[in-house]
Structures are given as structure tokens and as C-alpha cells.
Length: 114
Image (cartoon, rainbow, N blue to C red; front, side):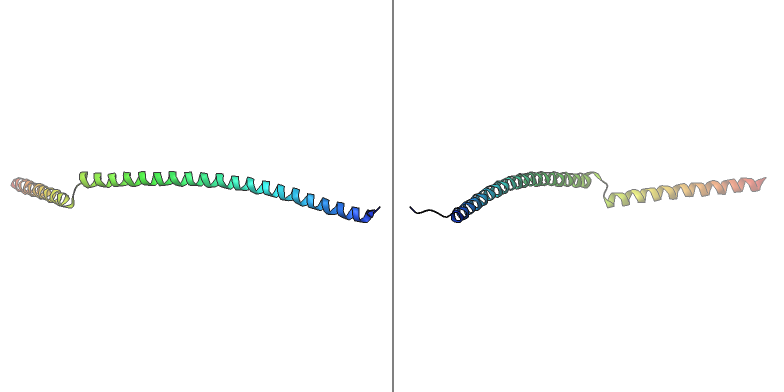
């Protein structure tokens, strides 16, 4: 009968143990990689949702700004209108100045009579 020496059995047992240890380590590593991949996918999905929300907000702000500009263009005074108002105000001030000058002349004339 052929007997297997004990050292060969030890060697085979150690090799088998090493293979089992490698298989277990690979399984654990694979599980960690899957968990990391799932976490990474969740983060990517959140980032996509945040980007979509940011784009929606940017579009809404762009619409609001366009509406504001249109309202400003329709409601605020034009340069020509401001020029006309300025001319009317200057004319009114000139007339008030002329009346005040006339008043002073009449007051000066009355005081010289005394």
C-alpha cells in the first residue's frame, strides 16, 4: 500500500487552506465593490436630480428676467418723455423767476416812494 507522507499532506492542506482563504478574500472584496458601486450609483442619481432641479430653476429665472425686462420696457419713461418733462419744468421755473423779478421790481419801486 502506498502511503502519503505527512509532509505532503501538510503541504496539500496548506495549499487548500490558501486557496480557500483567497476565495473568501475575493468574495469579500467583490461584495465591498458591489456595495461601493451601489453607493456610487446612488450619489450619481442624486447629482443628476440636483442638476435637473438647477436647470429648472435657471430656466424659471430666465423667464422671470425676460418678463421683467418686457415690463420695464413697457412701463418706464422713455428718454424723449423725460426730455419733454424737463423742458416743461425749466419753462415753468423760468416763468416763476420772471414773476419773482417783477415782484421785486414793484417792491423796490414802492419803497423808493417813501
